Amino acid sequence: MTTIPIADPDLGEEEQRRVSEVIDSGVVADGPTVRTFEEEFASYCEADHAVATSNGTTALHAALHALGIGEGDRVVTSPFSFVASANAVRMTGATPVFADIDPETYNLVPDAVAETFEAHDGEIDAILAVHLYGLPADVEPLAEVADEYDADLVEDAAQAHGATYQGRPVGSLGDAACFSFYPTKNMTTGEGGMITTDRADVAERAAQFINHGRDGAYDHAELGHNFRMTSIAAAIGRAQLEKLPEYVDARRRNARELTDRLSGMSAVAPPFDPPHARHAYHQYTIRSSDRDGLSEYLESSGIDTGVYYPTPIHEQPAYEHVDADAPVAEQTADEVLSLPVHPKLSDDDVRTIATIVQSYFE
Picture 1 (spheres, helix red, strand yellow):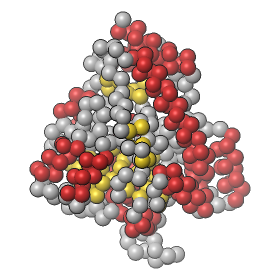
Picture 2: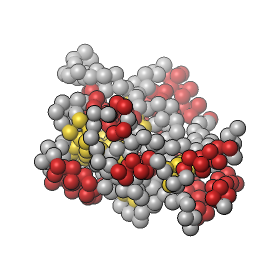
Picture 3: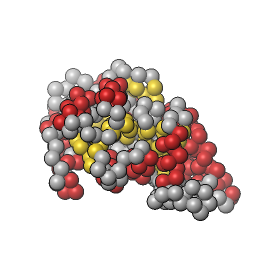
Picture 4: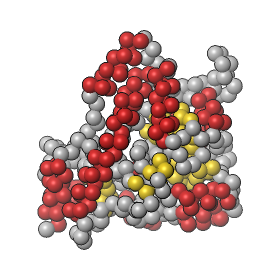
C-alpha cells in the first residue's frame, strides 16, 4: 500500500466555505465569482487580462484560436509534454511541428526552434513553449525567434503556477499563457483552466470563443464552444490562489532537501534549477538509466512515483504521421521518474524518499 502519494490535493474548510457561498447565491454557473477569479489571477501573474476556461486543454485551444491560429498554420512545440499541448494545436486545424528539448531543463532548445523555423522557410506562425514540471522555458531567446519571424509566443504554463523567469511571473511572458487547475497541479479548481494575456484583442476573442462565439445576449459573431468555468470551480480557485505562494514555497523547500540528499549520486540526476528562473516544482523529476527498477523498488517501499511522460508525443499512435528529429526527448522519456514533492509531505516523508532512493543504488 502506498504511504507517500505522488500528489495530495489540499482542499479544506476555506474551499468548502467559498463553495457554500456560491451555492447559497444560486449562481453556480459562469458568473461574478468567475470574473473575480479572473481579475485576481491576472493580478497574480502581472498580466492585464485573464479568461477562465473549463480546463487547461480548452485554455490552450481558445488561446491559439484567439491569436488567429488555424487551418494551414504551423506551431512549433515540445515533443516531451502531455499530449494536450500538441492536441490543442491540431484542434484549431493547425499542424504541430516538434523541436527537440534540452537534456537538463526538459524544455525547448531555442537553437532547435530557430533551426525548425529555417527548415520551414520561416512559414511557422507560433511557438508554444511548455514550462515542463514547473520550470520556465528559456523565454528570452524564444521570443527573439518569434519576433524575427513575426510569430506569436504562447506559454503552456499548465504546470508552472508560481514560477518566474528573470523575476517575472509565468503568464506574463508571451502573447498569451495557459494554465491548468487539474487536482494534481500546484493549485486546483477540480477541473479548470485560465488564459492570461496583455493583449485586449486576444482576451476579448478568447472570451467570445469559449462562450459559443457570443457577442451579446444571442448574437453569435463566430463559431465557438462552451468552454466556460463554473462559479463553483472559481470559488475553489480563489481560495487556492491565496494559498499558492505557500504551496510553491513548500514544494521548493521539499525539492531543495531532496536535491541536497541525492546530489553526488552517479546513478541519479536531480532536476536542474537554473539561476535565471524560479522552479515551481509541479513535479520533482530525476533521471536514471535504471528508472524502471528504481520505480518498482520505491513502489514496493510505499512511495508512489510517476513517469511523465513515457512516450514522446511524436511517437504516440495519434501522431504516427508526424516526422520529428527529437533524440533527446526520446532518451529522456526512457529515463525520467517523478518523486513526491507536494506541500503535504512531512520532513520525515522527504527524508524517507531520499533514503530509499539511496538504498536502492547502494
